[in-house]
Image (tube, rainbow over all chains, first blue to last red; front, side, top):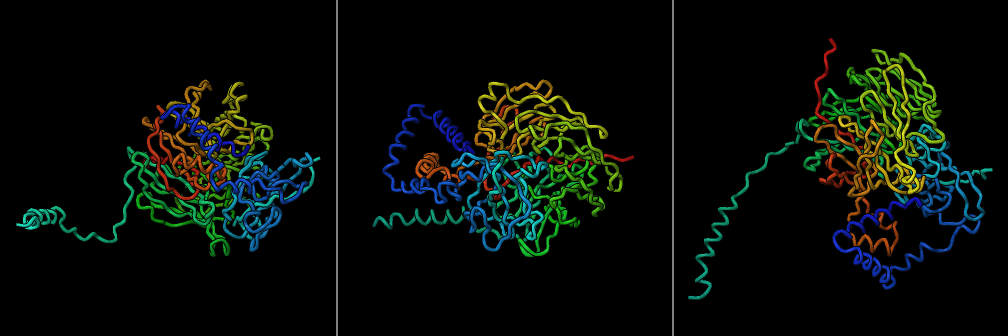
Length: 173
Length: 416
């Protein structure tokens, strides 16, 4: 998973706490937090994050969530959170003509799709829904598949980067 | 005699004593501005910050890592990609982009010069408005070994470099490097550029900064199967790189030829099965005197090679053997080491500025996304030999990512 580092971090913090207390008491503490979770009124947040797919069965997932299948090779702010959609730019920006590609598997049909991550350009970075996943990402010297480049370069809005889309170009045969 | 009357005398004495202890302060002098102290016998680093999402507000932060004092900063414009630190002149040289209307209007690319004592802006040289704006800053500009020319990588998306004579402070020329990208200095008039076909361009300038020769090497690495990270480190006449799959590559240059040493693996079979791999953005450092390499690593799936690292593994460069490991206080995206005998190790690390139990509460109740909103990047300092954590410096901008050690200026060698 792209966010595996967070699990690792929690594991490390748990280990650090274990040095100060006993391992068993930490495990008990975590267990009681888990058990106690049901008593807190924040549970609807969990339900929201697990809500049904708004895009339909053929294109499953939430385009405002970094785990959405099309984002397998993205690095940037999600346009779907910035006033645009997964395949459109927010108002006041323009779409870059040159970009990088990823190949992502659609969990619904099991097929690999070629995704074009066109950047939207002309304003400051949106700052919402940062998403960094690097399946197939390459260094800048292999630019067609590199997400480490500001791809607003060469657009008529120049290098002012706002957010990134994820547009289906076709099926990878 | 009432109690109040009885206490009056000692109370009055106490009040008068207080006024003696706390005498009136003298008025402070006005308009005093600090200067940086000499960096001799001190550890000072610069941290370049591209300031995402406030990308118009790039910065260079200057920090004394012996005391943890934040010494100053300067502003560097839109989507910054790192400062250059000359060896023989006490200045900071900064390739920058500015727009006349924040994120629109005329784009102006310049190389700016800042005084190394006062951090005052000294002047600028205009360069073509083509400067490369990536996420990883290393290899985007360089100073030739004799501190004469600054070379800046361009991307339009065609690639080229701009050459600036920073002694004469004038733009010299633009050189096409199509098919190649990040640049690395190799000599007084020479530098490398890494290419998508697994070769390097070897570029030589003449004494005026014009192109003297441009030569492509044979294929020296498999760019498609296992590309080299752009986070290369210079070590005398060698450049060291690590590949995405965890192999250590060294290239020896004599200014004319580039010789590739046999790559060796950072991980044995068991460690590969356990998913150990490279981490972060600036993930390799070399302590030249001890000939030890420091590599930022973590456990995760193949696509996690930019995730923060949990450990630094230390290798002996001569044998390729792992000789030590440092478990980091906090997970890190960038590392660097100083080169002195009392060397320090630096990391830009992820810090959640919340009590641990509250962090656990947020993680369990609202998921990891809510926790990420509380993440701040800090500079952590360790003693290099022992790996002992020394101190942490927080509140260093928005997205600090590139650490460079800033040693004291040395006298220029005579050309006689």
